[in-house]
Length: 74
Image (cartoon, rainbow, N blue to C red; front, top):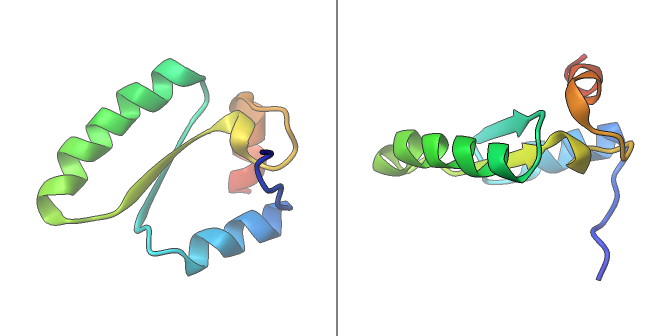
């Protein structure tokens, strides 16, 4: 099953309407998601904050990397 693809504005809107309070974005792949996920878990779980960790290649545009993250941020 394929993941639903959003535009930049659609992705931002999905973030706005979700129950997630913290969104962490990584430039790398699998290892970065695990590493930063553990940091988020240690910081957020004790105070009951929902979080999500995304890799750059999961953002709209199917490219990934630092440039994709900067483009999404702007």
